[in-house]
Length: 97
Image 1 (tube, rainbow, N blue to C red):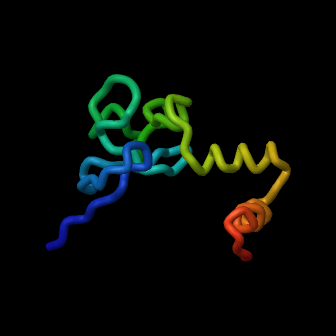
Image 2: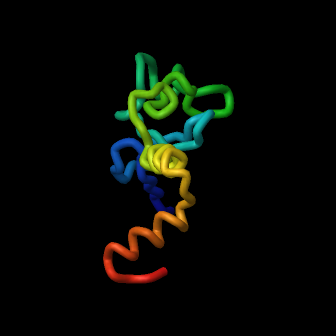
């Protein structure tokens, strides 16, 4: 019997599968130590399907910003695609993509 560990998208720690759950809204993995608000992680904070309720997710509540969301925001502000940004970055390092 193996033990599965998953990375928490909030703190980055490898957490035993019993102490991490996906958010019902954004789908990110959140460990019991990174939830927002009061309640029991195994009962009160989960919906009927076992997912973390949106109001307990640090990303959905705005308590944290995920790097992917920040990147999407920056690319939108720059009016660039990820590929265009990679090309520009590679040029600064003397490389090409």
